[in-house]
Amino acid sequence: MNWKHVILVGVLSALPVAAMAQANILNAKKPEQIGKKTEAQILADNDVFLEYGYVDDRDILWSKTVWEVIDLDQRVNFPLYYPLDTIDIGADRRSLYDVLIKNIKNGKLTDVYVDSYFTEKRKFSDLAATLKKVDTTDLGYEQYNAGEQISPEYINQRELTAADIEEYRIKGIWYFDKRQGELKYRMLGIAPVAPDVNFIDDESMSPEDAKVELFWVWFPSARQILHEAKVFNQRNSAMPISFDMLLNSRRFNATIYKEDNVHGDREITEYIADNALFQLLESQRIKEEIRDREQDMWAY
Image (cartoon, rainbow, N blue to C red):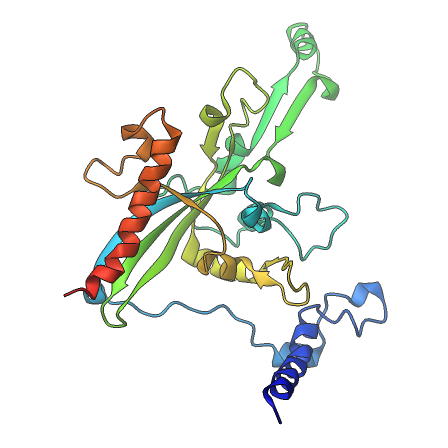
């Protein structure tokens, strides 16, 4: 048996596993049965996320905390943004924002905070002013001043959706594990960023000034939720990947906009102002400094 036959056997042996990723679509007698696993599949299913290993503080030889921005206009980051239309598509495919906001609403995701330092918690009721705007038109005010009840058509409601999310900001720590002798990354938090709902349709404000962080999610506690939510795999639709795998394996493009420093963790834009090129070069410098740290560990 040559190597071609060995590879062919390996591919054929993986086909049943790939078929299971479609959740019984080939065995369904009715459309309602698609997405529902059989009892045998449930018993054989060991699909769990890969837990982090324990890292003792004494094993961390060096570390640096960085904040990065994931621009959703870049093609490589599209899996975090799409799909936007949730009416004509299956419930198993949602954007990252829809997954987060749904689980915050139903109470499964509780570790939601105001900022990236995770000191002040927030509930979904506390986020209402950030996610939704209710405004009354001039005709509605006329009815109110006349002592009448305001008609529903004179009340404008604007709620943020997945289409309004422009970027994600993540916080993570790079550290050198001396026990395993390698540089590793651990994500700590993620935040969706969108225009301020109160000024989203205001053209007088610049797009950069209108952006706000809606909330920060403590990433380790959201891993099970992100593992259950799958991302469309363009190379093989029979093998979708989870948001947890996508984020932990860093299958996205991000730019550093802040690092922990003596100046109170100031952002790059605070000490390099009005120069996008130099800001990008500074971000690359920080990235190269982290990358070179691992090489310097082995230099004598």
